[in-house]
Length: 297
Ligand SMILES: Nc1nc2c(ncn2[C@@H]2O[C@H](COP(=O)(O)OP(=O)(O)OP(=O)(O)O)[C@@H](O)[C@H]2O)c(=O)[nH]1
Ligand SMILES: [Mg+2]
Ligand SMILES: [Zn+2]
Image (cartoon, rainbow, N blue to C red; front, side, top):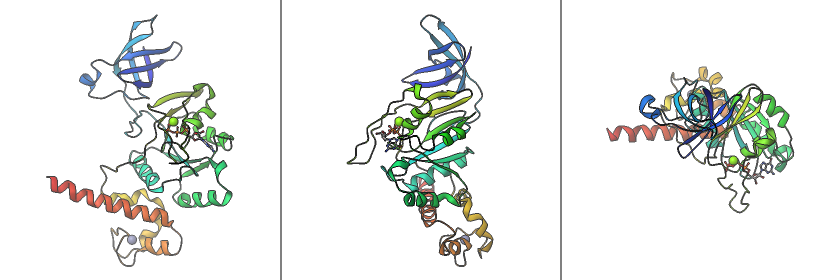
């Protein structure tokens, strides 16, 4: 029988088979045979051990369309990067890391600011300004009062999406809004430390409607950019590219070179300083990583 892994917890995989429900499966031998670990979102073939007890064995993982590392999910059409407009404050450096990683894996990303009920119009405008020129689709929503949820649902329709973002930004709350019967756990945020408790511990695929699925994932607070050359970084800042022809040097890194079109655009307010600063920070990090890596050899 064929099904889809909707959840994996300590060695058990919960496989949904259309028309017949969920089976609790082990995946004995899969790693040995296919050298891969099953992921939420994987389409698999299972052998039923007991129809009554609804247990089975995953016998093979079907070919993946893609597999993300963080969050660890397979076969997604898009990622919805969720940050809170406030509480906790958005961390743009982390957002950039995430965007770079998704672009690198060729996963389309939508940026979604949740908790818009907590901020005024001016603050929201400032948030939107950071990524406006990068061309990402942006949504502002509130899981609390339902603002913008229709638009979010529109964006999800007919696709399998994964949410991603730090802890406490309201990923599970939004999924609850969209699919109220899913009953995701929602943590109470600690106001003092402005950090949500890590209530979502495992990725879980949720059926929204028809052919619309969404994966709830645990929050993360850091993301290390691996397998990326510093020279590659600028291609993940699409708003830089139109100013590049004005750089004096070919292969300009837009850091310390003179007559740099990107830095000129920055000075003229055509590029977000937040984005540019994060570009410099990530560039430096990749440069140092390189040094470290080669020293090891
Ligand atoms: N004011 C306000 N609070 C919200 C909103 N959405 C979620 N919250 C609150 O934020 C806290 C964290 O929400 P969760 O949905 O658990 O956050 P999460 O992103 O799933 O967190 P992890 O599972 O830890 O990654 C809860 O106390 C929610 O009630 C919103 O739109 N507005
Ligand atoms: Mg959660
Ligand atoms: Zn330049």
